[in-house]
Image: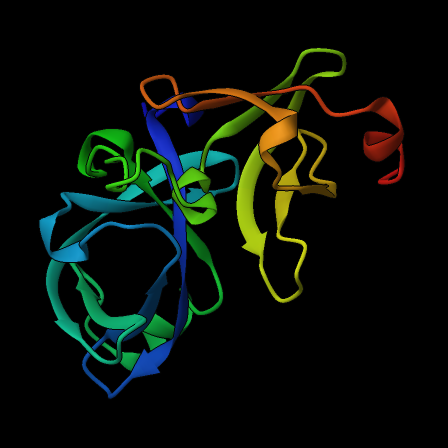
Length: 177
């Protein structure tokens, strides 16, 4: 059985491509679908692996994926707009950039643990559409909260355990309630 701590939210499926079961997939993390054993989806609360039989690039951001047993447009359509996970063992180790830091997008899939508020949730995306870059965090209750990505709030990053230790003022966290 696959457990939540063994996987990382990796991307989502778009729409079927053609009639032979290919489906467009967008990855939100730095990984290569050609190198993974399987993609994992939440099916009624159980993490189910779907084995990748072929991958070919479509655009810079998307790949066309064929999964074992999915051989028609109708079957592929059932995957449309669904998110998928990858096994942590299939995700390459995060490497520091040449100046010794990480990009905010490298932290997607990490858990935010605040020294005052405890575990806040998992970083599921980054909003960089404005000058103030924000973590988009999904709480265990499936609520979305936004927190600024700022060095003064980040105490440490454990790339092995995939945890970001923070110290946000409670007022910033309460803005999300």
